[in-house]
Image (cartoon, rainbow, N blue to C red; front, side):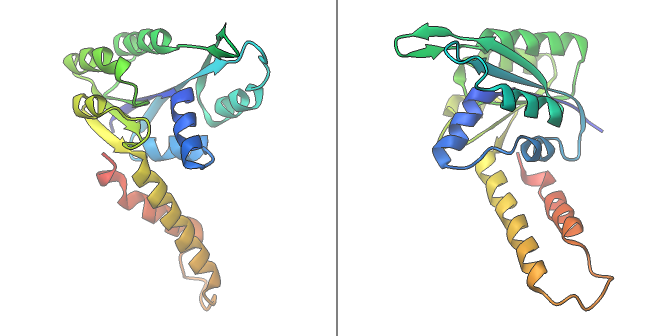
Length: 199
């Protein structure tokens, strides 16, 4: 089984989900990206607002609970807001992972084109680098072209909605046999069909 490590640029993906008006389910996304693979580790990089350092405490705790190693960083005040760039920290951890863990696949949850140099370097080392993002919202075209593969998170949302709809339909059907598949089994089967077409 392919060994996988996931890197989550949390601010990038949270903003994309926010633009779509959809709540980010960290556990569901992690399960989707690692399905059919051996998840060695998952890293999440979370910026902290220096004006309110505790604002993301619940998010950080939730990320730890679903299995992420969380890296947080306090940003710098800029005008009425703040700026917190984690690109260097993510890049260093990507290279450290390549040297120490030597995974078969790295999934980078970010469409930021600043990661192109490290993506290409990891590919030269024989590591498959897949980018997971939304083409119309947070994925630069150049990143989509230069990664080993692209995971369209719009498709993830569509498949998730189909699973929910099929689960709701099954609850409306009369339960005439105990031999029918449970909603959980149906969900698992629907997700299993998606393994080969995510990238």
